[in-house]
Image (cartoon, rainbow, N blue to C red; front, side):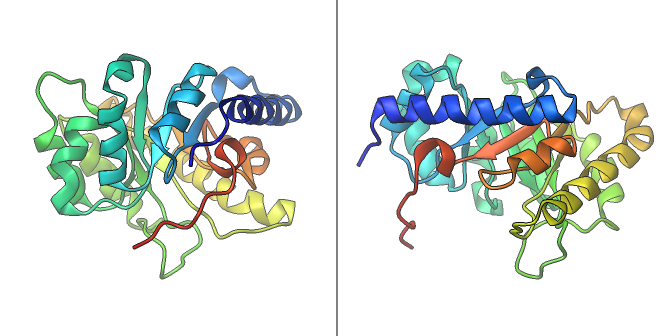
Length: 241
């Protein structure tokens, strides 16, 4: 069931206001924070409604579901930017390399190598972020802080990719400092990588962190891209399977 087009537009306006307020409080320009509308489990019509309201970047967790939407909205492809933010299996790298603009969830060199090799020659390099397990949770994907420099150096040298920065999904927290701490660690990790990777020319300009519940904390700590789903598209049913 598709969400009302006007409610999506209203939700987007509210989220943009939250981003603007957070930026003002942090002494940052809203122009330096990109809103990624997380459209997982939403029908293509909801993406079209958000596009009509001026939203162009969309995040998807499930490859096949995303491909269905990409195909359904093929006529709008020049106006859309598709980001994969969910786990990526080796057997899905080819279709992702062919269809997406960004992948945020790279945490293994094997995945990065396959994406680089399978990126079509006629397309620009695929933008990637390295997913870091900032909370050290055994159940979470992501490279450890200790392994991050080695992986970053290897990925920065792959010709089909453009290493843009880091991504994380911290443990949920309600207290402000508890929300800020993992985002701060991710920012510090990116800052530490910049001089090391400077010779590679990797931009390292992206911190993909912050969601509906903690985007203010993430922006305070330097997020350049916030991934917001519920606050844009509303509560959605749990995906079957």
